[in-house]
Image 1 (cartoon, one colour):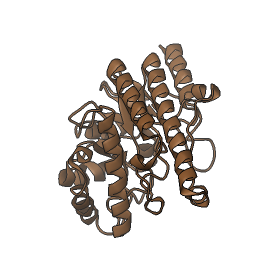
Image 2 (tube, rainbow, N blue to C red):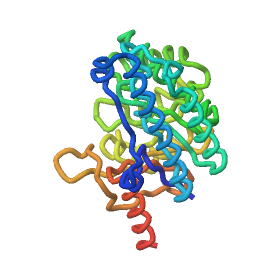
Image 3 (cartoon, rainbow, N blue to C red):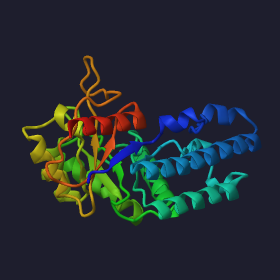
Image 4 (cartoon, rainbow, N blue to C red):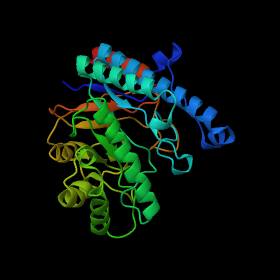
Length: 303
């Protein structure tokens, strides 16, 4: 059975008032530090509570769940100079970690992350690489804190995000910086195929990147459709599938109507083919859980 995945937020829960809160550095820096820390702590506690609520929602609907990359605003931002321990409600935040860990333990919901596009281990900029390492290590430590497996059962998925040099040079540069990550983070990392023609296709990732790094490759249906590099969908899925030692987690979306085929649609008009393989699939459709519910109705209609 292929489980479907909710990405970041539930629109049904949002309608009920359960939504993530953020805080910009400009706002944080404009306030007296004590007040700023109080507000930031309150928002992070809210985001953790919403995360817990969403995991329970996913359990009820048999979904896997990709956590939001906005749970901890400013915590890894150098200029803010804030650690979780600095927040006045740190004990309450720790309690929320415990609640999430309990929910995961009791429901076995699969949890993953897709850190923001600004993370690049292959960058030529030392500052970008340092910030990326800080961000990835932090999220992996969060995964540890909520009791997630230290492997790709709880994957943290990235793009290579670099075209400076030959494919081999980029892969070696990525791997050199990858080895600077905490070991628990290294064991969770996966890499996704790209949708742009000058970026990394499934063929390049499986033929060049994977032999150098050993990092599993995440198949994205829409990205491969945009950048097939002479591989059929079946061939590409099988090639990605073979790089995983745990149950794979892939991505599905469709093109929004218009001139940009890479833009994601709100809802699916078609169903994906798993070609006889079992894996989980994050549904990267703009209508989130509403789109997953409609997709399941589509499956029922076609069966």
